[in-house]
Image (cartoon, rainbow, N blue to C red; front, side, top):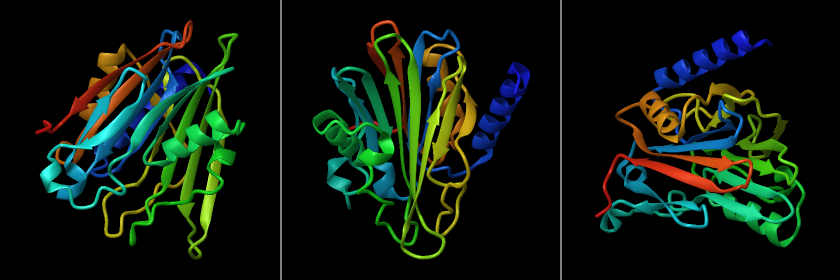
Length: 251
């Protein structure tokens, strides 16, 4: 696929995202157009008050996490309050993003036990226990090596079509400047919600952190979007910056 074909495909995919009323939670991981920054985009959406009652916050360690917008209105925090982004700084630098508490599982398995890959770190995890949707657990890792090279890993843990088993999909992908790979939890609205299927989708990563944040925020359905964050990771030193957009104010 040449550069023009990649650009056209990525443009069509972000247009499809914009036309989807409910992609659910999702991420894009890749490389900014300058080739100087790894980029991670993560968003959450909600149809019900409990899912919408959230904001993103971050701290100086590069951690992105969810908190209630109004703690007095929390119904069930089990699947909505979690660390969405964390970092591991060892021989290589690893930047994790996920749609649930498996972010912590990856950090524990890789940081404390030396697990070498994302799929092995998640070997004991499966899709979310939220019938009838059985939401997939989607996880990505951007890894930065000492020589400046990098790689992307993506994991999708989805309920089997043939029973209660867990189908496991693992991808190792190369980063190309100006592009990223996207996975969402759902392919659209419905009851139950239809799970994501197929391979990660090529998406554009054009402009600086503010432009990327604004572009993806505008692509999300205005009624259902809740929060979005962009992390930019400097390849030359591994330093990261997070930009957050919250629909709701924390009280």
